[in-house]
Length: 275
Image (cartoon, rainbow, N blue to C red; front, side, top):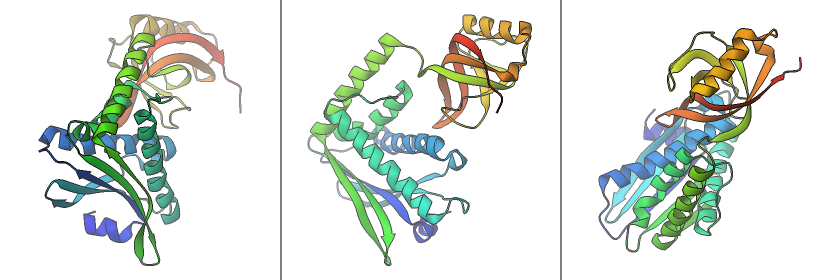
């Protein structure tokens, strides 16, 4: 679907305006939109997993010192136009609030190192400009026109303040844990008694309901975690699919799309109650 088709069929979209005084490096320019797109994909994966991969971004207008881009979501018919508008505008509002928290020195809750890296990409170009700004606007179709629902502008100084907060939070994460998610419940949908090399897919599939209803391949992030979990699979008298594993794990991404879980530590195994 092209820009014109999305514009005519969408009930809402986000507009990102980048106004810079200095020339921007191509890598920083591309990273800004890649980072924003990755954040949108995470939002979709959490709020509407069936819409994963639906983000589309287009450069709407380029003028001297300024670039305007539009971010759309291809909303499946089963979601509905009204719900689709709420999804797009909801993401924009949350993203603006999170950036503002970083500017004010507040670390983000439940945020992984890969996510911090993507947020860094969205503000780096502005932060490296002498006097640039980035504006994020949410627009919604009403009475035949797109009207502004919200708008936020971040200056170069504020972008640098956000990066300072991100650097502090990244160092804190590195000191406290190597896993993005700690003590989270994982359950098997396919198991295998064989061993797999650390960092390679094991052939097993698991579900982590707190992150997604989709089952994903399991990767062992440490020899000890594999040894402990395999011992349960091989020697448990109980049905493995009726047992829950409390683990530390990382999401494994292909681009911006989560594709697997990497378990780094097993805390305990519990019996799951029948529904």
